[in-house]
Amino acid sequence: MPELPEVEALVSRVKPDVTGRKITLVEVLRVGSVKPQTPAEIARLVTGRRITDVTRRGKNILIAVDRGLTVRIHLRLTGELHTGEAGKFTRVLFHLSGARQLVFDDTRVLGRVNVLTETETAKALEALGPEPLSRDFKPEPFLAAAKRSKLPAKLFLMSQKHVAGLGNIYAAEALFHAGIDPRKPIAKVSREKAESLHAAIRTVLRGAVKSAKIAYNRPGKYKEAAGFRRAVYGREGEPCLRCAAKIRRIEQAGRSTYFCARCQR
Image (tube, rainbow, N blue to C red):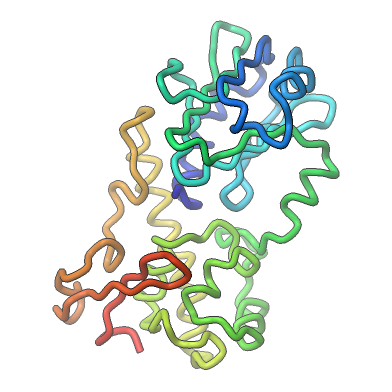
């Protein structure tokens, strides 16, 4: 599933191509991609409107159009957004002025494209925590939330209430860099390690965003964490980069967690 770095890279690539262009036609090629709205509703709401901005909030792509509406796109597991040609897995196609197209592809039809008012957008995003690369992501509120939580460290990071956009890959990497066992209750992590985790989240994500922007060169040729040197994620059985012990994999809340049992305590 695309996480914050991948979505950030995608937004940075799409934004200059579509900002200022008018939506001239909308084709919904898979009804499930716009539920609970209908294809006719999507088309009615945005046809003829001009794209004014493209931003990211957590893992959400927010395409602002004039008169206060937002096209909210969540890629889920297999979604992708680009300005290339439509293809076999295109689910929603926005025709734009200047002979451009904004294409939403999704092989498994898990992602969603919806058009929201300002109030609806605010409600959809209200549960998200601070952006980890913004000034709003301060150590003290993060540490206080950790002390109140009953969750294991990995699940605490992935809840989206405490860190917006952080997912499976980079949560595992941040925990490794901070030396924290993903199974350990976050409330029992020492203040020193919790502070290290806060810093590690920012460091890991900055590096991943940089790698993602380099790696995302054309649709269909991009995978999560492409170009990012992973210390633990996806490396089960391989030697730890620090101590050479074998990286372990366990399951937490239905997702794979990778860690070094020697380095992370």
